[in-house]
Image (tube, rainbow, N blue to C red; front, side, top):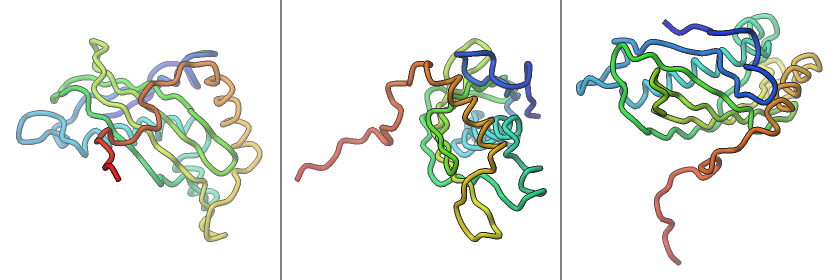
Length: 171
């Protein structure tokens, strides 16, 4: 079962957010005995929910306010196979944010530090009562902005923002 690991908040100034780890579950295994492609998406989503919970933007926020972070774009890179029982840990980097949106990059690694996947996600802050995207309340934005400042000096992965690596058609 997924769990938060370590102290609240980011690992410290200038460190990726690293509170999520999980053991690969049977329900995420394909007929080859490995984590199936959608399983990586589930694990990345769970890791980002732990981050949102620490920022005050998770399920309890939605229940209390009718507002939530909606995924509007994602890109997953599959780097290595992983199997049932492997323990995966996530390190998340808040790449960019403003009061209406957040861009998060997450690296999943096995216990031996082998990178198994990365996910890049774009989220929008949606207020259901308003019927669309709105700015986060000041207290929620302050938490996001503090993490953004803490991550500002961290190196950015070379693949960030590139999308699928297929050659572009000529013409």
